[in-house]
Length: 405
Image (tube, rainbow, N blue to C red; front, side, top):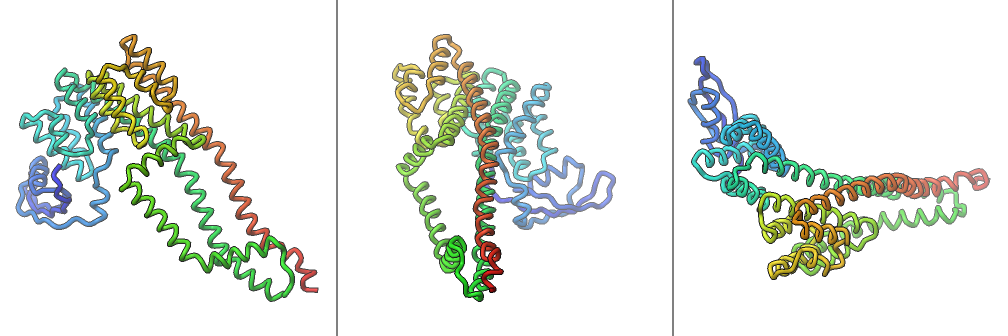
């Protein structure tokens, strides 16, 4: 895709009835604006380019969801026997995002010029990964473009659904913990010192719990800045280590897979994506070696990713896939057995699809169970923490009569 940033083009012209009209249009180049206005039968009198504001750029930015929508729309149109260039035009004129319109304009012009769709997509944006491009290229060679885009649409939707489920499972407890932390901080730093001054004026012995809470409040008030700086330093250090040290990422990823409950969920989700991607590539006629290489791009865990080059090398040297997987303890026996059955029966892509579906269902079930269990546990913890603070402050008030006497 053209890397020029979005600009806001203000234009003046005449419509088909000869009446003056004006407007503005977000695009990357003046040629896009001219083509858009030409389709509306507008005679251009003046075009002026201005920088687009940040809000407009953010709203019109290109995202992965746009690829999913584009794939589903193109699959629907192609399966309805709409020619490719016309299908691209129909998607283009109805799309709202400026960056996506620019991409579709570039792709459509390339296709009209005789360039294969796979090459046009590859040149247009890096968001189309090697699996996507290879499947489209294979479809062009076999004349199955509509069928492959339909399968791609299903694959991307399943992948996005699994990602959303994992994201939801992580965000919910994090939001609860964040809100609880903010509430506790406000109580400890701003509310409890008011009670502490009140109790100190009585000059009486305070309960042990109240003393500890007041001590924690004093410490937090004195150390808030240093505590925030320490947290910031730790976060920056971890991010730097992740970006600079492959060894750190390797051991961190291995540790993540060994965690109780969450480790099994992360492993199954990674294997589900891996098996689904491999099965999709095999179904499109791509070789097992190329399919595994593409599937490695769908794996985010660095530990699992480090194993794939050795597996691919062993398969290239004549070993079967299930024999290569058996060398590593992290791959479950179910995956190995079904892979072996698939290789022996010549239905490897079917078995890998079944494994992917099995693991997706397992991850979904575990996440739903975990969510149901976490809700009461988090509520209980919140009640204990916040309730403990409230009780600690009201204990002296319960003895107010004896303190005053």
